[in-house]
Image 1 (cartoon, rainbow, N blue to C red):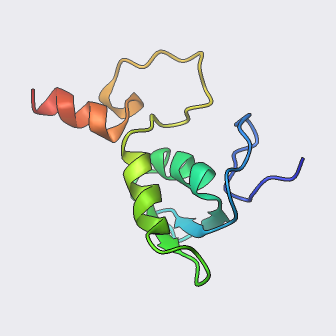
Image 2 (image 1 turned 45 degrees about the vertical axis):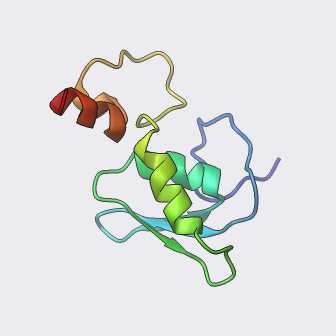
Length: 99
């Protein structure tokens, strides 16, 4: 099975849709991918950014950004405890800071 470049090798999920965005890390290294894997990748990066590819459907980057906000970093790792704020989704960490 071929998956998009944004899919982490340990992530067992399949692509959902075409390659639509590029995710860049803080050092400007990037990977293009489907919205599903791009959101999972963006959730795992500090200082990451997402940009729609020219042929992407309108709103692709915003959908990825919004989805990443609710995804825990490295969501395919189900064996690590999720107790520190940096192990939670950005939404969960925000809720802890602002009860």
